[in-house]
Amino acid sequence: MRILYNIGIRLYGFTVFLVSSFNTKAAKWKSGRKDIFSNLQQAIGTSTSPIAWFHCASLGEFEQGRPVIEKYRKKFPHYKILLTFFSPSGYEVRKDYKEADYVFYLPLDTPTNAKRFIEIVKPAIAIFVKYEFWFNYLNELHNSRIPSFLISAKFRNDQYFFKSTGTWFRKSLHFYNTLFVQDTNSEALLKNIGINNVVISGDTRFDRVINISQQSFSDAIVESFKDGSQLWIAGSTWKEDEKLIFPVFEKISSIRTKAKTAYGPA
Image (cartoon, rainbow, N blue to C red; front, side, top):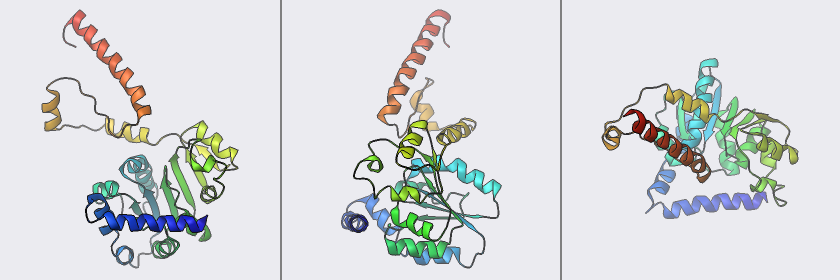
């Protein structure tokens, strides 16, 4: 199965290469990884500071990991922080993120790339956010005895880990020292397949949302669009999210309408 996995990873990289001439996102994915190892080596140089490596697939995962990154920075100021992304939608937006000392794309998950990456970076700790299960990187971290953690993770019973054919894929879960999950369902699913190093820690998005809500925000375009009316903005929502959001929105709108009718403008 590992051979098939590595073939699949290489096929993915080859496909991105083929479509990069006419797909902007693929082009950025490709160009962002050009000379990645020499750039990493040059950036890190001869620094002797320990490195905490945080990896996020994209921008949404970054927002979940951000509270942890910033708390880590405050608690361990002597650490350098390396932030990597798999997708351009994360890297292009946060490549200048000030709380990270280094921001890079993650090289493709081949055995050679994983080994070379770990040899250059020499992370003291590795923290992956939500849905990142790159086998070769996790295997290399495990073999190098580098503590690895998964945070804000959420598991569903339709994921390949929990299928009868998912035995090999479960190996990557065993490489984590601890898996911090969002809910009891995730904990139960993992324990049912023998993963017991699980801690329920909730969803770090709530920390980020609370932090954002305490900051002032204004935007001329938004103000012009809403023209004095109440406006809800929901980004990157899933159908499950919308099933909760819409009824609340309708209820609040109904209450405001009744208030205006009874007492005048709210």
